[in-house]
Structures are given as structure tokens and as C-alpha cells.
Amino acid sequence: DTGVSQNPRHKITKRGQNVTFRCDPISEHNRLYWYRQTLGQGPEFLTYFQNEAQLEKSRLLSDRFSAERPKGSFSTLEIQRTEQGDSAMYLCASSSGLAPSYEQYFGPGTRLTVT
Amino acid sequence: DQQVKQNSPSLSVQEGRISILNCDYTNSMFDYFLWYKKYPAEGPTFLISISSIKDKNEDGRFTVFLNKSAKHLSLHIVPSQPGDSAVYFCAASIQGGSEKLVFGKGMKLTVNP
Image (cartoon, rainbow over all chains, first blue to last red; front, side):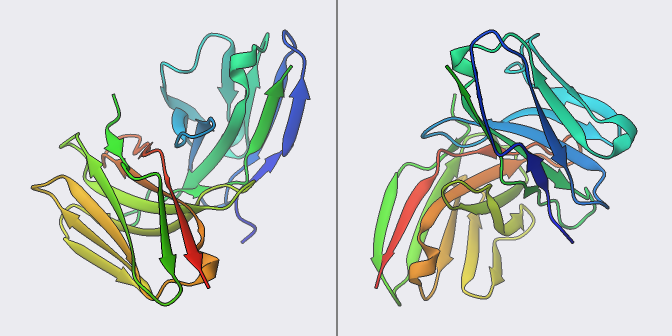
């Protein structure tokens, strides 16, 4: 069990550029989540996949954000035309969604800095 | 509106003593609660969880208590160890849908040797 992995771990980009992050969940988990964490705050939900279907998106996810999970395996989160306010830690989590345990397991995160 | 609140930003305890971390929530629909520990530059690590049908769950040195009427939960760590020093997040979810987690702002625990 290799856990949840995320790449890259750090990304520095200039305002207006596009960035893409990747998440590889725990292999047997069919649920995948993206969260964003800013300084002094807890993680905030962005979007949720069950297998390849994106079933829920937060209002935080503006039109510049898009997420995919082709074939229900890894997921990508793309931010277009980045803004300084997008600077944050982007966290991916996965879960089996099976009772009685519903815990989500997090990856190490991708820290985005927009200059 | 903060649905999950951790009102104390930090706690300092001596090694070997009990650490008590508190969390309050406002949404009565929450029925599953979790505690995560986070070290700098790492993702949150799951510690322990509790369903709303229980009022206590124990795992080794960690015990979570749930008081539904008060919409309050607490995490007890006994005995506290220096390696427990981290930021602790309380989270809540509603089962049956996406089960997305709603987090508090976190509390920094420092365990002094």
C-alpha cells in the first residue's frame, strides 16, 4: 500500500499561467476528493469523484478550475489563468466509501505559489 | 459561517500528561466525526473517528468523546508524547452523499519533554 501520492509537491508559476496537478489515490479506493488549504485555515472541499464521475463541486471551484478522473484511477486538477489568490496547498484524498469506516486518506499536497 | 469550530488555536502540555482538544459544530446533520494530525509540509494523517451512534471511541492512547446534545466532541491523548506535537484538525461529514469533510481551523499541540 503506497498511500495517496501527489505531483508535483511544489509549483511556482506566474500569474496568468495554467497549472496542472496530479493525484494517484490508494488503488482500491473508488472515491477521490480535492481540497484546498490556505494559511491558518483547515482544508476546504473543492470537488468529489466516485470512480470517473464528478458528483459534486464546491462554489469555491470557479470556472478557471477543472478536474478530471479518467478511467476512475488518477485525477488531475487544472487551474487556468492563475491568480495570486490561488496560492494555497492543494490536497487530494481518497476513501473506499465502505461502512463502517468513512475516513479519507490524504496525500502530501501540492503547494502552489502564484507570483 | 464556520460549521466546525476549534476555538483554541494552541495547547501546551507536559510529556506524560493528558492533552484534551475540543471541537464544536453547528450543523445537526453531521453524523460522522474525525480527527486528523498534520505536520508541516505533509498532508493530514487520519487519527480516529466516531459515528454519531456512539459517544466514545478509543484507539490506543487516543479517545474521542461525542456529546450530540451539546454538539461537542473532544480528543483525549493519554499519555502525551513529544511526537504528538502537531496541528490537529477536527472534521465532520454527513453520511450518504459525497461525505465531504468540513474542517475546523486546527489547533497546534505542543508536548514539552
